[in-house]
Amino acid sequence: MALYVAAFTACKKDGQSMQDESLKDDAAFLRYEDHFLEELWKNNPDWATSVGYHKYDSLLVVPTDKARDQSIKFAKVQLDSLSRYPEGTLSDANKIDHHMIKNQMESIQWNLEQLKAYQWDPSSYNVIGTFASILNEHYAPLTQRLRSFYQKMQNIPAYYKEAEKQLKNPVAELTQLAIDQHLGGVGVIENDFADSLKKTNIPAAEQKLMTERAKLSADAIKGYAAFLKAMKNDKPRSFRLGKEFYEAKFKYDIQAEGTAQQTYNSAVERKKYLHREMAKLSRQLWPKYFGTQAMPKDSLEYIAKVIDTLSSKHVAPGDFQSAIEQEIPKLTAFIRSKDLLTMDPSKPLVVRKEPGYMAGVAGASISSPGPYDKNGNTYYNVGSLSGWSAEKAESYLREYNNYTLQILCIHEAIPGHYTQLVYANKAPSIIKSVLGNGAMVEGWAVFSEQEMIDAGFGDAAPEMRLMWYKWHLRSVCNTILDYSVHAGSMTKEQAIKMLTKEAFQQQAEADGKWKRVSVSSVQLTSYYTGYKEINALHEEWKKRQASKYKLKQFNEKFLSYGSAPVKFIKEAMFAIPKIDTKTN
Image (cartoon, rainbow, N blue to C red; front, top):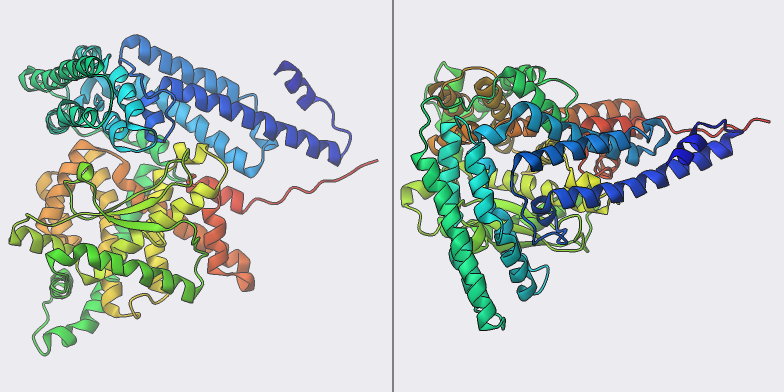
């Protein structure tokens, strides 16, 4: 490394040697990335499993003070290593990776040294998800996965004993969340593991040892829940993060161009704009649906009436999955007809009934292959409404009516998450996948909805645009809600009123959002923040391209950078190409 630095700082005779040195810099940085990832997974085996890197599946790190010190030391060592690779000498792609690794390492330090959620968030201690992944993802023969599962269980009792020692005045809402999650998920250890063992030819004596360890593990998990229930906590920490912590967490998690306060201010203005546009469309549609009936004076009231009428058009409960299946070819055909993007036919989207281990919330989600399994299938999981009461199903289907169901498919699938992730997997950088920026990923899905509506999807009907505005308000109000609650003092009553009266959400949707904001922070801002920055980038790109502008070109160039923060993609898209100059 010392020789490399010396070579880098030596005088370069001409442009060609500068180019040669640049190639060397990139090659050296790529070697560093490989080393960094290996060390990252060694220190974070659960994270490794979640992205499809299974070398450390059998390891479970006990959350001791020593383990935390090791994480902080790891972050500091990596930051020191990064300083040896000047950003200016790297390609655009490697420069972005450099930014993302640096941010992640600084985030680790801040979380452990400043935020200290390990002291007040009991839900941050939870091993069940990784065990479920090992059991349910078919990346290796079942026998091999079960033996990794067995080895990993060895540290479960010590893990939860340490968790109990670390907690001090935990947040009440997060304590209840941890109790619910552990008692709801312990079946993975208690039942599912034993059921899977029966499907193998593992010798009976070995199976006996494995089931005995599973019982001890399940007892430790239930013991943790019992400890939390009985814990004396007279002065619990507020679930509100506080403005100072919120701004710092926003900086690391979202990696936006602006601050959380600036993003909140923008969202407030965006809500006003949407209300004005929705009022225009509702006045236009009023005679069609209400004839000569007098229109209320309050614009929010007549918008709500039109939305309520349109929401009554929805599929029957039993047709929810088939309706989604029918949307996919329509979306693909529309994109081709408008030439918005190149779709990759070799990466099909498989629509399936939501697997049992994912069940619990009807709706839709995407399961994409991890960065270490780029050729795997992408699944569009569709939940079932069977067993729901007629009243609950009706409320849900009014929220996901004939209009918003189409927008949901745009967001989740085409050209939203599924399409973006197909492009991201084509990018050679694994860093951009494993450290993927949530604001970019969610922001693209929201931006893609707007693109489709602007291109005339839904026959350019005013009803479709009105319902997209209603759907879009969800992203905008997520930001307003999250900031107002965690950096301010918004009450539950104020939150529910905003969501139902100003965002036109069903009561059940609003109640669920309040629960979410009380057990999470910052993530809810990712949808609007990402959308806002991508939209601004698109407008600037369009302006600079002038007569050469093509939406397809913008989309494909933007997506080619992978799941990187928008501000770094912007920097790369507008970068002036380096010109080699030779001198005598």
